[in-house]
Image 1 (cartoon, rainbow, N blue to C red):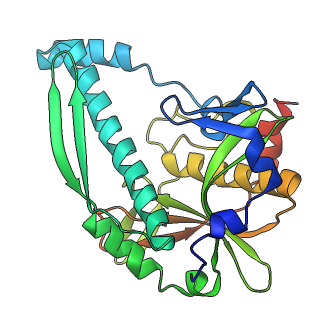
Image 2 (cartoon, rainbow, N blue to C red; image 1 turned 135 degrees about the vertical axis):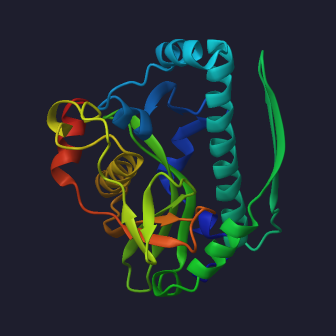
Length: 272
C-alpha cells in the first residue's frame, strides 16, 4: 500500500487536463462537451424506479402524504451518498498522509421533514485499516485515487476510486463500497446478491440475463472502467475488486469482480 504522498501528481496523465468535473451536478466536460457518467450509462440498461407512483400508492395505505414519503426516501439516499463520498475523501487523505475526520455532519431540509445527524465513520475506517494489511494492498502501491477518466469517442466518463500498481507493473482496480445491499454475511463468508426478488427487475436487451441489483451495476461499472483504461490510457487491469466497508458487517469484505467482456461490448455498441 505504501505510496509517495504526491502519487496523483507523479502518475498524472496527459489526458487529465482536458476533463473538467463539476461536483455539484456530477457533470463531466471534455473540451466543452458533456460526457455521460458510466453509472448513468449502466442505469439506462435497467428499469426505472417510479418513485412518485410508488409514493402515491403507499401514502394511501400509510395515511401520510406522498411528499413525506418521497422526502424520507430522498433523505435516506442523500445520507448514504454523502457519507459514502466523505469516506472516499478520508481514505484518499489517509493514503496521502493527511489528517482525517471521523464524523460527517448531515443536514436535509425538505418541505415536510428536516433531518440532521452526525454520522460516525470510525467502524468503516477501522475496516479500511484492516484492509490495508491485505496482501493485495501490501504488494501493490497506490497509483491513483479518485481518478477521473474518459473516452471522448464513446462520450463516457467516470471516477476510479483506487488504482494500485505492483512493482512488476500489474494493475489492480479497487472500488470502495459502504452499501449493505451488495451482499450478505453467512458464517463469516460474504455472498453477493445477484438476484432481484422481483422477476421484472432485469436488464434490457443484451443485458436481459442480468438481474437488477447493486452488485450487478457495480461490477459492470468496474468492467467499463477497465475498458476505458485499456483503450485510452494503455493500462491493462489484471484484477478488479469491490472493497465493502459497510458498518452492518462484522468485517470488511474484498469481493473479486468477474470479467464481463460480452456485456461491456453490448453496452458500448449502443454508443458507437
